[in-house]
Image (cartoon, rainbow, N blue to C red; front, side):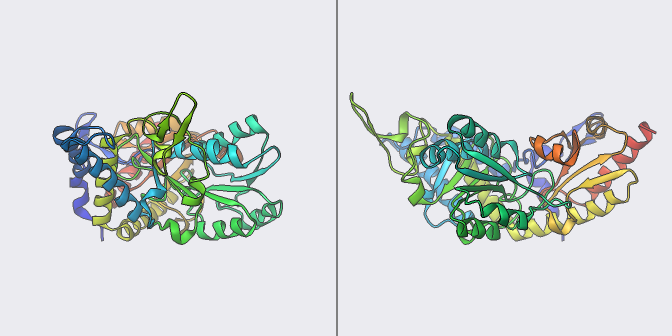
Length: 406
């Protein structure tokens, strides 16, 4: 059953554009909309509690610190992590993955060491490894995907025989929508003696995630894709790994002692949180977790899966339209597609004239599009506030696109 009241929780979804066209938001893979609860939590911090954290003993500082650290605890519980100190606040998933490459990678990898990443990765899980390759000479190999857009597990097993030091992959593809078998891939990586890194930017917002159960070594995700604010993300890392890693940035809260001779780094997680953190954003992140928990992640997954199946069926009925990736049962709420003879940017622009927001381009996954032989795709991405009427509007809009281009 559609969670009918949820649209009312998101103020922006009441807005109309282009001569009273109600916004139909189908771009949640880029960023989700924010419920009033999150907006109010951040406003209340600035109105009543604004102070820096960890450094003051006055009332406001202590209240701000408590709220900031309480958010860390909420987020840890939300993803099945028992120790909140394994939750590091970063700016986003991209920074989290860069932190791993720059800190763990520089310390533990050397020339010719092998890193495996999949062909369906976002640029954020490709470029940091390229940068490390250019710096120290590691080797990078790509895990192939199958013709229906899933990680080729047999090819992965063959590559693992080459004894990689690290395997990094996306839990859910931001283009194909593929939900990868994360627990299985982690186990295969560990059996080969490799560290397992997971990009969870598209998974944590959509499906129940238990990081400890899947036994990941590192797991990265962002607040803004899960009803939270921009500018804050999380890196989960196993404490024993984090404690051996050098700081990523210097200054502020990441130090325990500084002298004229040198410095001593703070303990985990503060060692990786230099300077004044995104305090209001952390509090908003905690509020977003409260909101998602109140709805229920399994309920969200079931609702999005139902809407995705409906969208997949309706889109498949359009002649000349091709959906990229696996069947509806193997994907999250991401549907990237092409229409014969019509550029994705033209599709997106015409849909926008009807108030329908979709994304067009390579979606920060140029190698994947190259693999597919496509310069770009149009992407409709769904979340808990979408229903079948939104899909009907998309189908109607695509019908108008076809008429315009004859």
